[in-house]
Amino acid sequence: MADAFDDMTVSEIMTRWPQTVRVFLDLRLLCVGCPIGGFHTLVDAAEEHGIALEWLEEQIREAIDLGTTMPKPDNGPRWWPFGRP
Image: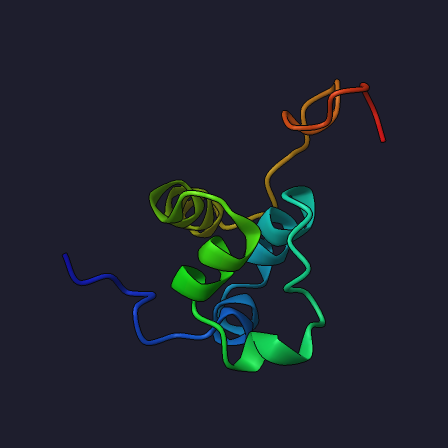
């Protein structure tokens, strides 16, 4: 399936939809400010960080659809095993 993100770099996605920056930060992906962000696609980022591409695309789409930054859960990010960082 062709995706809107197929030909876009991570930096282009964050520039076009600034609300997606929060997704990258919450997932602790080092894409924000990374010099490789201008070359990496979401496929590259998912592979590099060992996460499922489909899930990452879903998170990005959700942030775009909301049009705002996604709120953090009260108990911190889902992946953080010790409560709030």
